[in-house]
Length: 398
Image (cartoon, rainbow, N blue to C red; front, side, top):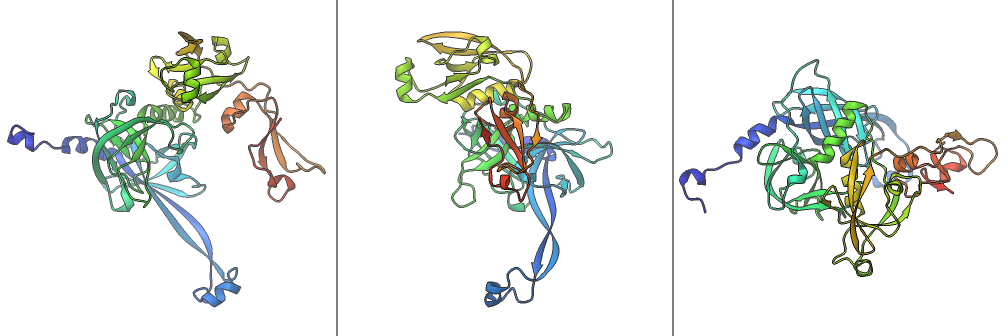
């Protein structure tokens, strides 16, 4: 209980005042055409003339949130906020009411993050600094800032409910901060702030049966966000370390067989002899339990730990092999494009006419998020209206 009048009046206001100017609204305006007919409001005519009517263009708006992470106008948001923007206009509105057009400098659907640059002609902006999301603990107080339902900038408070949530099914790299701070539609891309006013995560999704907040929200950790922003500023491509191994979760039955006290870690069930994992000494049957001392509970957690290390240098993997713990030093290198992809559009009278194919290599497999690293051929694209269009793009042919 508070021990004084001053303690009773403690407030989050100083933290909010520090962070709010860096949280923005992101508007995406698309021009879409629709057919309009004076008869279309009548159910009888809708049954017979639904394809008739004069085409009319209208503007379709979508709304999300974003965070300024660079004083030159670098904004990070969720990829799903701007997904399908194409030729759409993107406008960023600041907390003080000013609006600026923005351009996309990176979209990464695998992390569900996007980075924008404001067209501000040299103006400087208030930004928020990154915190180390690995230092978060369950029970820490956090604030969620965004624009839920388009009502205007809103701040909610809560705690870190859980860390390293990997079974959420939102993106390829699942390693989310869970919070009970109220997050609603429109908060996507907004800031999750710690009590120092620093960014610990980007609010991304909620678990809800009604569409509203049920106290289970998820945020992408700031260490992943920092990596994607750095990639955007250095060339616009997120480069991910290559392990060169196929992994599976450790079940309770496997834990007993492998001599583990609990089901945790990532089990190596297949390894590429030319990959960095094999060169480091990893073997089929090894269980990876940590990366540089950070615990790994499943394959998704291992992927996250490697990705946030970035390219260059090494990582120490804590491995259990034949009941004995040992360390393996892994070089952090990008996936190899061997053989060269050699993209080719198939022509002539074949069932695959209209398909653009490429040699399947570890680099291509990583790019398309395929478990199979080759050898083989993968369908990269198809021409509409061809026989090959019936085959899903990204399908590997061994």
